[in-house]
Length: 247
Image 1 (tube, rainbow, N blue to C red):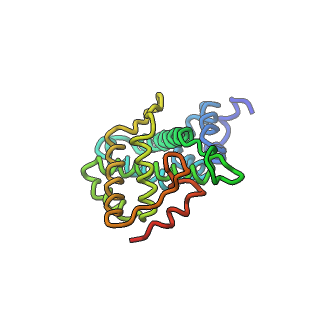
Image 2 (spheres, rainbow, N blue to C red):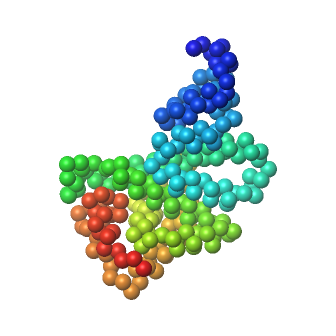
Image 3 (tube, rainbow, N blue to C red):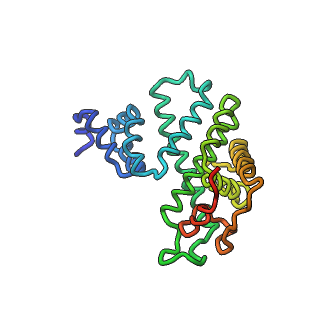
């Protein structure tokens, strides 16, 4: 179909084309196809993102929670934005946060070199389930950091941590340990800074809560055959998390 014929399509049809995109790279390509496609994307970013996101994100609930908290933390600054502008900002931030989570996961995979470790079975390389656990913890520690850095949301940070099971706290603490001590914090022009105030706050709050849980309890006998003794995200070491007692 030539570009001149796109203008004859109803906007609802064009929007549906966007919504059936496999991922956001296809959405970006469609938006550059013709002016009518670009305007459709600008008019319907939320509905398009909601349709495409479940096919892209393994942790969509956590990604959307982070978005909600970021918006609440910046509510005063965004109060003058139009509804359409807020929708566009939200869609762009969702994609930015996802790129950050992906970049962090790549850095973690590069550090771990898990395929060189023992007890990995027939599939020694990092698995989708392991990446999903890591990215879930990444979104959650980031969310806690945003809450803890905003005075009017600090009570929510405490309540969020209250809802985390001891096993989840262990995962969040391991993510915080990696973010604080075991990465070079070199994400190029992406804009991710794991040593900024938000991330320091999130890691600190998680660490304190995990230490409070451990006080008076026997330590976990973590495996000694995994990279840097990390174990919270790997499939073959989930049995160690089962040793963590509930409250």
